Amino acid sequence: MAFAQANEPYIYGEMGCGDGSHGLFQMTLNTVLSNSNIISISYYYASRRSPAPSDYQPGLNIPAFPQQVLSVFGLSYGKVFFSNTPCVRYILKGGLCAGVTLTPVDFEYNTNRFFSSNYNYANQEKFVIGIVLNPVIEFPVGRGFGFSIGPYVNVNAVTSVLAIETSMMFGKLRGRKDGNYR
Image (cartoon, rainbow, N blue to C red; front, side, top):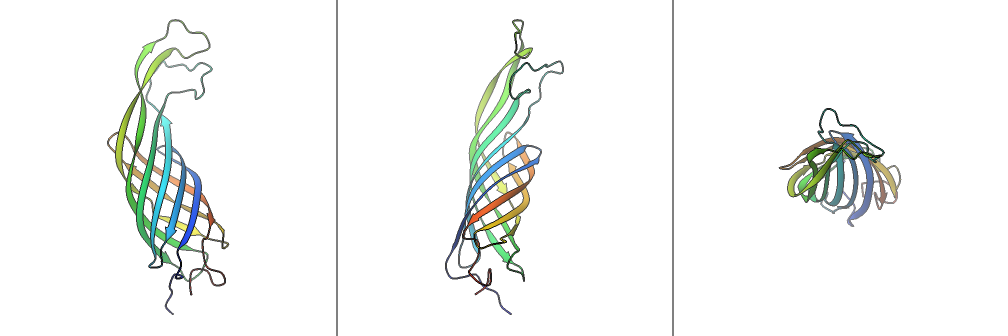
């Protein structure tokens, strides 16, 4: 039995989070084309605890420890592989991203400490371009709602992110009666 995507494209959004080398938040707009290719436009915000002096003590600051932040927009392209069930499909996609990183630098001991940390620091901002790999397994349980899970890899000149992300999908995810097939 040959399976084929519906003639009209599926357009849907995703919003999710993940954890790994960095904590991760993502928003994505996906378009599955009639030839089973996918194009994604995404925004990713990743943060992790930055290296700090060993005697660093947080004050009442939120977050308590200095954070290295990666904020990027990405454009990905890939292929959708359909399974025999309409509620599972596999997506291999990758692409490019661009954005900024903020990294705490120049730690100086704080002698006037009142409700603040014992070190002051500056955030160094850098523009980065990176490569993104994001294969996922999608579970479009309904025509307009579903879930996805998969690894997220972002490699750039400042930091690399490796995380497992889970997302909630919403929009046109599959066809009317029989899921992904005509």
